[in-house]
Length: 410
Image (cartoon, rainbow, N blue to C red):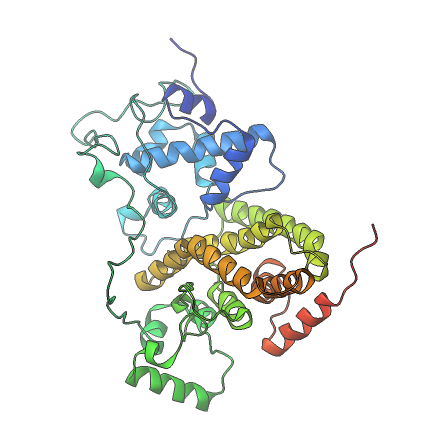
């Protein structure tokens, strides 16, 4: 009898589930998947965490019921799976489908592309004692075997594909829930975080709400730079559209706002610890790149990627949190904003490059750096660096001060 596999690397090997071959690719998998991460993990720990993610994705893609996971995994490995993502709280304790593992599976599928099934029997090798038991439950209550994900029979059991762009032509207008409707279903703290005009006085807010009731929000706002609520911000930049980095930077910061729900237990502690570690790493990155904005050369592609990485990390956490807010329209919109980031990044880069193309080298570098600073400063200042929020005037002063700094001595 084979020795039981006591870690996910061995589990994946026995089940023919490939793991990325290098540490960089394993880390990229974890980052792109929005998992709780830490900058202090060793190479072996990163590989084991990536293997755990691959296994749970395989289980979700092949409709292996979360009810069976405790019989497939040893308690220690089951805890590792629970620690991959923050688990939303249950909406109803009376619902048998509201176990923590079922809610975890929903979060996994949210960040999961189509995952091919292995050629071996799903899950893990057979084990005894404290190891991993992969025998499926027998008897009438056992769930039926599922076809492989990616096969014609298994397409329905695979993770949902990303939203497809609308066909050419006029897209249907979207109708949003507005103030009264959202206030009725969202927790107060969530409503206040999403409300883009929470700072307005009572009279101004009444006029705004009245206008939104009488007219479509799209007729009142340019949703790429302003919207009544953060999840309604449209993170897109059509070709040749005007790009205002100041207004778009403020809009991006509003789109990143969210609040966590009250939670306790191991998963909440893992979430908090992992988040702190990642934010500390981003803070170090900011300190290292801060003087680049005032330099004589364009900010490097590496630093631009770091800036977008900070945005992606926050938006991934926000999309995961939104599952527990009790409003499918809001959670779907948060996921759509996250999904739109790669295309938005490319469009922004093109717009900034075009604006600087006709300028002499020094002025071009200054133009590029200033645009990126104006775009990212509000988001990073509020969500990544965790500093006090400013209005447009306050951020303009910060941008002027940062661009006037002398570079550090060699």
